[in-house]
Structure formats: C-alpha cells, structure tokens
Image (cartoon, rainbow, N blue to C red; front, side):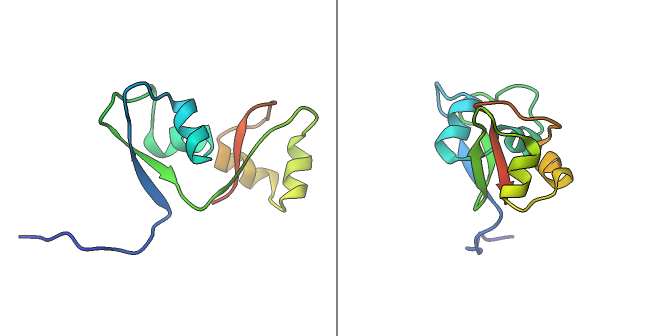
Length: 103
C-alpha cells in the first residue's frame, strides 16, 4: 500500500493539455522554451487533450529579436554557447524563437 504525500517544489511542473492547445500556445503561456518541452516530453507530435506535459519551472526564457546573435545572447546572460545549445536543443537562433537561458 502507498499514500500520496506533499513534496517540495521540483524543477518541473505538470500541465494538462486542453482542447485547442498547441505546443506554441502552451510554451508562450508558461514562458518556457519550445525545444525544452519537446525534449523533456520526448514529443514527435503534440499530445491529445487530457495528456500531461512536463514544463520547466523557474527558468529564464526570452524571445529572440531581429539582430540578436547566439554569441550576443550567451554573453548577455553569461552562459556558454555549448550550454545554451544543449538547453535549447539547437545550434542556431532565429527571430521570434523562444529560448531558455537558465533553468
């Protein structure tokens, strides 16, 4: 037999997918990077309503603006390019892309 108990805040939160949700809308509403949700949930397509998604919590995300460079963002937020690329599962950036700087 087991019982559920409260636990402290973890690095991830759960989100229940609702009708009409898209990955982009969920990421925008919660300020999380698209690539981190895809990676953490091992998604190859968006799950149906009622499914649970793991969402990173306590991270710092930003939207890439025209003129931003990978090198410039990494310098601004004091993160190595290797770490940035690992967190965002990408090797390049583009305007309107939501990227995670810190978890």
